[in-house]
Image 1 (cartoon, rainbow, N blue to C red):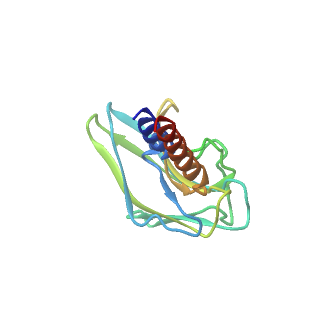
Image 2 (image 1 turned 180 degrees about the vertical axis):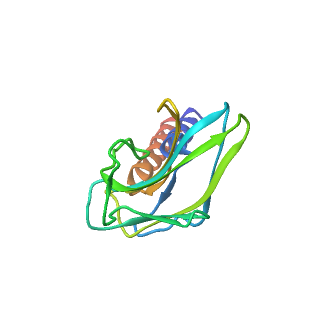
Image 3 (image 1 turned 120 degrees about the vertical axis):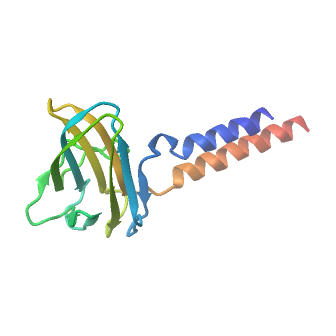
Length: 176
């Protein structure tokens, strides 16, 4: 029984629960239409930064469509901006991309939301990503979320799952 519980815990640990906000898109994939929503705990006056960043390569593109804003952000635009201060869900910092920035004022309890869609013509290990950052008037980051990024090949999770089941079966075999 202990081995079964251990296997379940390892399986849960390998699923990446810590990045519940992030949608992992397969290589050459698409997130489908998604909605970002944030409710302010305190009054907010500041800047919203929505961006897409290249993480490693320079020739293949990923895109972020911002429905309702009429914006289409790319990782390799003709005039790229520095996105090296933004990181993906694996804490790998970007290099260049595009940002869409605008001012926002909200009261405590109010929500800010937008629809988005991330699609890519890139592949792992380059992990291009899309993000949103809320920065207040004092230039303090109030909220940062990685909306989507290219998914890593799920071999480590498969190894954890297989390894934990193997340990469980060996444990059961010894008791028998």
